[in-house]
Amino acid sequence: MLDLKTALQLCSENYPAIKARKALQKAAVYDIAAEKMNYLPQLIVQDQYLFASTNNVPGAAYSNNGTAISVTGGTRAEPVYQGVWTSFATMLVDWKFFNFGKVKAGIAVTESALQKTKAELDNEVFQQQVKVADAYLLLIALKQFMHTQEQNLERANAFRSAIMANTLNGLRPGADSSLANAEVAKAKLSLLQAEQDERTQQVRLAQLIGQSQPIQEIDTAGLTNGIPPTLPMQETLDTSKAPLLRYYRSLVDLQASRARAVKRSVFPSLSLLSAGWTRGSGIDNMNGHLNSNLWEGVRPRIWNYMAGVAFRWNILSVPQVRKQYHSALQQQSYNSYLLEEAVLKSNAELSSARLRLATALEQVKEAPLQYEAALQAYNQSDARYKSGLSTLPELYQALYTLNRAAADQLTAYNNVWRALLMEAGAAGDLSIFTSRIGN
Image (cartoon, rainbow, N blue to C red):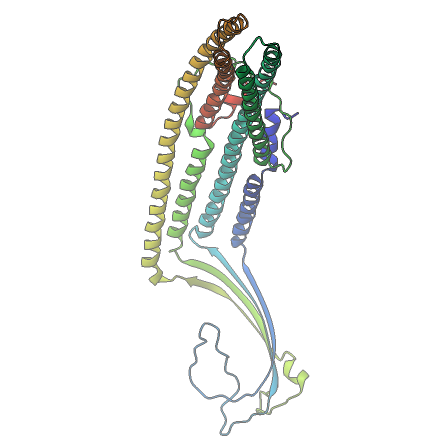
């Protein structure tokens, strides 16, 4: 037996799309931690051992962004292609201790991204729970309709049994038995369609809460043949707390953080630098003698150190960053307009939901009157038929009217709950609906 509140809880725990949003939220937490690591200095260590010739010519060389091989050795009258071993090891510390808030701005972007993923998760859970609640109410309606069709089939079978007995005894014409058989077949077809609709909805409800097996039994207590208790409409609802609107606001905030980070990127950086390095070579410092022995080439022979401050500023990046900043501002405006549109849609949906709820409440008042009138008409037609004062088609028409009135009455009560759910969905507050379900 699955009650509605349990279905809502299962949905928030099991539905794959919600799990995906939770994973994104965890990823955003790691992104913040990673961005904070930019406060730390860089510590770069390298060690290399090479066997190469040592010919060189004087002149300048450009490293070509680190892809060119560095020149080594002295100038000679004739090239010497004997190879020697060399070694080179360095350790460099580069700490950007002052960067005009660029790291802080980057952290603010990741924190805004985390808030966006939280709002996205809340909205995903809310929208999915609204779908689950609506599917649950629709399943209740289909179960009630199937029960109505079962009652209709029972009446049709009872009529056919009575009519067949009267026909065999010559009290009724043979056409009445044929009409009774047709009505029973019609009732069976209607019941089969109702059963199919109910089973399809069971599968859909199971899918919405993240289960593979169809939902067999649901708890309809308090959701059938009654309207929600304490139902006065609120004059105003705070739509600013709606999950969808909070998600759009998080997009605006995220883009604003990105714009600030872009603006900060134009500033220079001050770095503290320190380094130490050692070098080995198979070339003798005094006479230039070449020694191809491995150990003589790779053992450290000289040591050096360095410490200082570096100022870095790509001045020509200023025009580019300015364009990127204005682009980010336009993206922020784009998200602001999306938020404005979402607010308009939310207010329109809320007004529509309230109108639908008011109409459903009026229908609930009229539905029982329709059912009582149809029941009286059916009883009168039944009595007239048994007395021979009316025909069987007239009786079946009264039966059809009664069956339709019973279905309309059940639908009217169900529509009140669905209209209330629609109001809760538009307002972004599911408690408007769930607080009236009961325990």
